[in-house]
Length: 407
Image 1 (tube, helix red, strand yellow):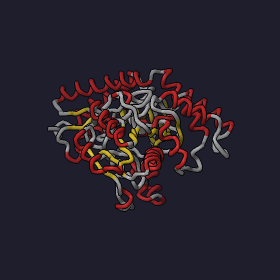
Image 2 (image 1 turned 180 degrees about the horizontal axis):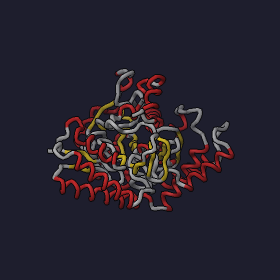
Image 3 (image 1 turned 90 degrees about the vertical axis):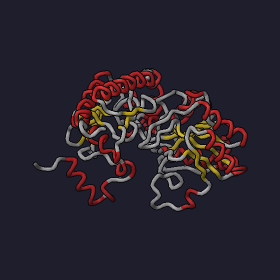
Image 4 (image 1 turned 30 degrees about the vertical axis):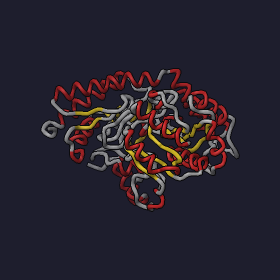
C-alpha cells in the first residue's frame, strides 16, 4: 500500500522543520494512527489530509467556539479584509471590540490586544510589576500560562533567572496560598490563576469559591493584582469571565483562544487601578493591530449571545458525560470525568503511560470521533445532538477495544 497524504507530508516536513512539528502539536503525543495534517473543517467536523471525517472534539485546541466557518464570522472577516487588515494603525473596529469587552466583563474598564495567550499572560504580569514596583508572582504549581521563558512547561532553552521571583502554591488550597504569600512578603506583585485547574494529565478542578475569595483577599490586603488567565476557558463557562461563576472578579484577565473563533487574537482586560501601568509597559507586535481578527471577534461575541452558545455547549457536554459514564458502567471500566462539561476530560483508572486511553481514542478515531487521551477537549456551538450520538457510538468502539486492558 502506498503511503497516504499525511505520511508523505510528515516525511517532507521532517526534512525542513525541526522534528517535523513544534510546540504543543509536537508534545501532544497522540496515539499512533492519528493524523497530523488536516484539509478542511466545517461546523463541528474536521477532515484530515487523507479525506477522513471526524466529529471534532478538539476544536483547534480551543479557539473554535462557534464552529468552523461560522457564517456570521466569515462574513465579518470578508467585509473587513476587503477594507484592509494589517494597516499603519488599527482600524475603527479595534475601538468597537474594546467597548464590547468592557461591556461584557464586569471587572473591565479597558482592554488592549495581542496575538496569543502567552502575549496576554505576559502582559498581565508586566502590568502588575509596573504598577506595584514589586517582582514576585504567585503561580499555582502545574498551571499552564503559555510558552514564554517565564512560564513554559519545558525548560529547554531557558535559565533559572527566567523563573526568578516566582513562588508556587496548590490550586484550590488556601493554606498553601497563604504560605506562598507570606514567603513573598512585601514583594508580592500578583497572583495568577487559571479560570479552573486544567493542568495536563490530571483530574480537572473548578475553582472553589472559598479559595477564590481567599486569593482576592490576599491581593487586596497586599495591594497586588489578581490575574485570571482565561485564555483556555474564556467564553465557554460564563460570558463575563470564568470566575464570575464563583462571584470573584480579577484585576486583570488574559483572553485568547475562543475570542475570535479561530482567528489569531488575544486581549488583556483590567480595572482602572491598573490602567496607567498598562499604558507604560512596552508590548507590541507588527500584527497586533490587524483588523480582520478584531472584526471576527466582534462577530464572535455577538454570536455567542445570539446562539446561547454557553448553554448549548453545557447541555451537549452533560449528554456526553452522562453517556460516557453509562458506557463505562456497562463495560465495567473505571473512567474519571472532571472539569466543566463544556471542556470534557476523561482519564482511565490505573492507566500507566496512558496505554488504555490511547487504545480507546485510537478506536474512537477509526469510528469517526477525534478525541484526546489526556488533554481536555472542547465543545462548540456548532456541535449537534447527532454529533454527540456519533461520539458515543465511537466511544462504544473504544470500550470494546480496551477489553482486557482496563482493570
